[in-house]
Length: 363
Ligand SMILES: [Zn+2]
Image (tube, rainbow, N blue to C red; front, side):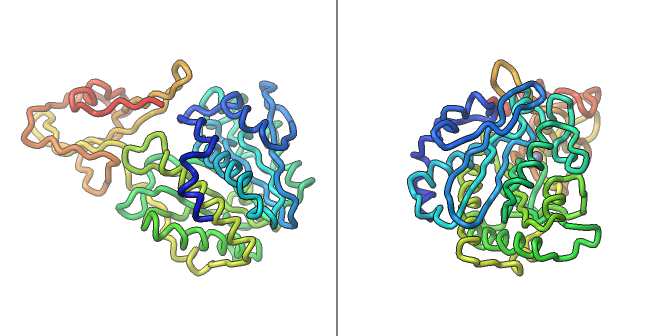
């Protein structure tokens, strides 16, 4: 399956691009696979599941349960198109794939659904049609594995490296004990990490495993099903997350390879460093403010405008920020750029950003 890396740029799924991915954007690709309408969202948008393969191991995957996290959806369609061309790889599996669980959030580009509920905090109550549908499907399909597919914010690093991908085998209870289900998920993640290390060394992190029974991953692990959380992260100026998309798809395939070969590497999972909040989008060093010199951190807020996502720079932190890393770092010492203290934390920093000739991103 290493040919995925060579083939991926030519897959027909590559016509799906950008950060703003809605049900309409992927419908033509979804329709090329056997699929079923499994329910509707609060605003009555269709929610579809793709069924492929008829092998003994059942895997349930879902993406965009947080509507503004679209990298996994694009990686998933890449994987599906790859599997269509390489059906032998599927022999072991029956896959059920929900590309967009939260189509209302995807349309509005929000984390939450149309009732402003975080579907990943609704596992117990299942108060929303989208979360109820996922749990119902879990009970009827009875998967051997679940893949819970997300994007993470740009703030995460692995020590001083940006974190391109992070993973978690969620806890099954407060003691975080290593149940059989957890052990398996850890083993698969260890296998993925081992494969990624030669390609993207030291850019893979492990998420915090504090138990939260209201999160879907913890909930399904508690029911005894190995569940893997995947998170796409930010590296450098790749705000459309093209590189991340490629390695995300590769990771999904490596997870399937691990399961089909029964090759588990839990010891490697244990060695994966925990992600740290060690990055900001832009770090401006040594800017003059009044009669002192400070560092400034900007964070982008993603705003949906005319079907595009605009990255608006916001003043995030100010002071001595030596412990932070920037996806972009600009040192302005010696330059005649002054900064007004009147700009409060949380305010729009577009003018400053223009003054420094920072790229304005939109996707
Ligand atoms: Zn998420």
